[in-house]
Every structure is written in structure tokens, then in C-alpha cells.
Image (tube, rainbow, N blue to C red; front, side):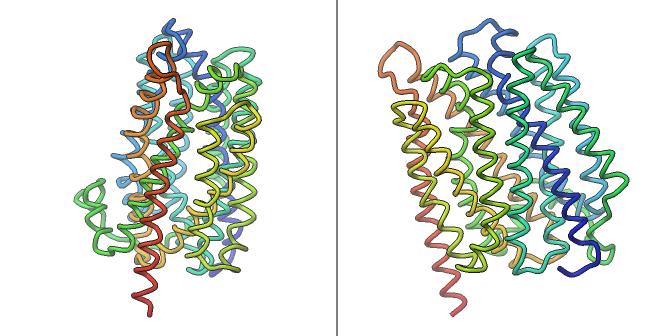
Length: 407
């Protein structure tokens, strides 16, 4: 670490990320019930509507993540983080009140814009951590977000049993608390001399990708991230609907299952990423996660009972090693004044999969979850297996290219 108070600053950034993810996790268990209440549709139809809500969120994040990253490179991380978190609280207020379905779409559009703050949060790590330690701290930040998924869905499941609107109110309160704490305690991490001029030509998804293409290895990593996140969309999009249909889970069971995953992911990313990178190196650590993720999705696809879903969660949590290690390898190849731009590009890739993934995964679930034709609701998870195999092949090719260039 390079500056006094760095650990305190990163702790506050991790706290803000934690609050952000708690808010997101709170609403997961109640979305099926809320959509059924507002629409009166069956579970397979509400799954498809839920996919369109995720699409709206992801589209805004895809468009605005490079803008938020670019603004943080120009004006600093602190104002971007605090403003987006406060406005996210306003979004949850809107969703708590929403009397009709279209208001949920308004809320999701707004949340997508504010959710782009992920780029600014990760840029704080690149600002203050040594290059060889970034993977460790990216993992800690990821672990903080995952911890939010431990508390968020569990509380959401409990609150949802008293009313499907209560988790949205709780999420809004948490966002306001996080913004207030950050306002008084969070210091800026990007010195004025390291800031760059802001231009809309670079602060958009396509301009950012053009900039990243100047470093082919980074561009290849972005493609691998796209494939990884596309595969994960099967769990993000249909987890609740699949387990309701296949095993009769309720809000509490859904919330606890997501909380278990969040707990394990927090342990893996926050506690194991640093030691793994130190012991095996960032390159080898990027591969480890795939060795666990692929069997996990096979279990999800063919699960004979609830126990298989739990075992899959345990296996899948170790996939969390890959992302922070890959982030370290990417930040090492990008200049200090463009770290926000890099994180914006990563966020755009993630959100792009959230545009495509929910429609594909929920559509595939709907096609194989009704009484017509083949009944195989695990089809989205099987598709994820195929995508991960392609991503693993691409990762090994890119790492081989790095090794060749180094030698």
C-alpha cells in the first residue's frame, strides 16, 4: 500500500459496495411474488417478465458504466460513488411504491444507471494498491459485495414473508445510510495530477472498447469476462423460478440459498484470492475457478433434488477466484489515468451479458418449463456449461500469449 489511511479508505469503499449489494440482494426473493401480484400471471410468464426487467437494468448499465468510469477519471471517485448510491436509494423508494408494472421498469432503468458505480469503486483499488496486490484487494472488494448477498437475501426472505414491498423500503434506507457515511468519512483516492480530460468520444461503450483494443491482451480478457458473465446469467435470471417449479421452494428458502452462495463467495474472494495469487500467481488463479464452476452448472442442470443445488452452490463459489485475479492482470497493462475507463469497460461487458442473458435464459426456461414438448427446466444451466468451456479455452489461449510475450 502506498498512502497513509489507505486501508481505512478501502474499508469504506468496501462498506459502500456491501450496502449496495445488500440492497440488490434484499429484493431477489420477493420479485416472483411481486410480479405475480402486479400481473396475475403464472410462474413461467413472470420469469419472462423478470427477464425483461433485468434487461432494462442491464441496458442502462451498459450505456452508462463507461460514462461513470470516465467521470470518475476526471472528477474523482468520491463524488461519483456518493451520488450514485444516494440516487439508487431514490430508485428503491419508487419500486416500493410502484402501483403498476411499468413503474417497476422505471425503477430498473434508474437503478441501471446508478449501478454503474461499480466502476468507480473498483477504480479506488487501482488508485491506492500496489500492482502486485490489486488482485487481493479486488477480491476483498468482491467479498464485501458477496457478503451483501449473505445478509440481503436472507433479510429479504424474512421481510418478504410479511409483505413483498418491505424489502424495497429496507434497501432504500440502507443506500441512504451508506451515502451519509461516505459523505463524512470517505476521502478521495485519485490525485488531481492523475486525472484526465473527459470526452464523450471515450465515455461510451464503443469508444471505451476502442481504447481497450489498443492493448489486445486486455481486449481478450474482456471477451472472456463476457463469456463468464453470460454463463452466470442462468443463475441470476432463473434461480428463483427454477427452484419454485422444481422443488417448491418459498421466499425464505430462495433467500437462504442465495445467502449461502454469498457467504461462500465472500470467504473465497475475500480470504482465498490473495493467498492463491501469492502462492500460485495471478495467471494460474484465473484458471482455478473454471475447474469448479463447470461441475457446479452440471449439477444445477440435472439436479435430482434440493441437495444437489446446495452442493452446486459450494462448488460454484470457488469460481470467485477467477475474476479478481483477471482484474489484476488487466490493471497492470493500463495507465493510471485510465483505470476508471478500464473498470467502466469491464462493467459494460458484465452489463452487456445482462442485456442478452436474461432474455435467452428466461426464454429457454419458459420453453422447457411448461407442459408442451420436452420438460427440462435445467436447460439454461446446461447452456452455461457449454459457454464456460468456450471461455476456458479462450483464457488458456490468452495466458499462453502473455507467457510468450514475456519470454
